[in-house]
Length: 350
Image (tube, rainbow, N blue to C red; front, side, top):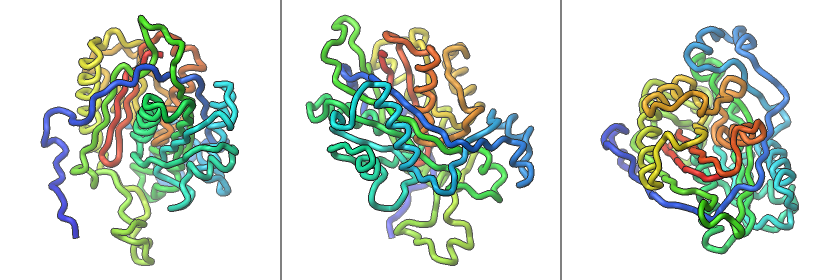
């Protein structure tokens, strides 16, 4: 039995994690996909959920739910196809596939390998599980492959079917989550502007495993196999200490953002757009207010999709780009945070 550290994510004062940069890597295409079924707050009243409470406490008004015959790889395929079309690249040009997900189709094979097969790409493929911070981990990992010269065109996908992880009897957690996928194509920026090169001007990844119990699915792994008794106890469902996660997320966003901006030698007033993980409107409001960021520079689509875990940031990114809210040359701050506990923050020049 492995000894567990005390649950104390407030034990340290500043985020600890690698600070780096990935200048010379740019996003040339994005795509996203959400299932057709819309589940409104009013639809959840029959389950005992309070529609007004959901809006007041979270800002969520609706979310998407995958059909019974849809799996995570199905959503990932649609988002990846859209990103490839947007970038003007074909499957034979993709030489790396990374999928961020905590809801794979199977324990093995990976969603990334399923996606590689369906796309017809000839490329290494792997999953990354950093939950709601997954897309940040996946995109920063892909950037390292490109900078090292081991990839020229990387497909990065964030996809989760969170509706399969939540207990309908948990009235405070069940309304928060939805299903979606988002994708981006990353390439080397060979012909960039030497004065203002594109890419990640600065980034940070981090984790605080001491807070893992605050957001977890206890059953189904090697520590606690999903026996009939565990299934009857609901151990297959997500459990969350909402109050503790709220405090941690606000702190981590502010501190990691300051660390990343300091590394970049820039101020928050120079950032054109901020995309946080779409977990809760109150978290977003609290986090950006501490940094005195105008609301018009914070992108939000939480009200329409809820918390889509690893899909959250690429889904928001795709919508912001298509809506003209992110333009070439803009400084864009991305931040994902969630189970693990893990986070990733990156400042991009678009």
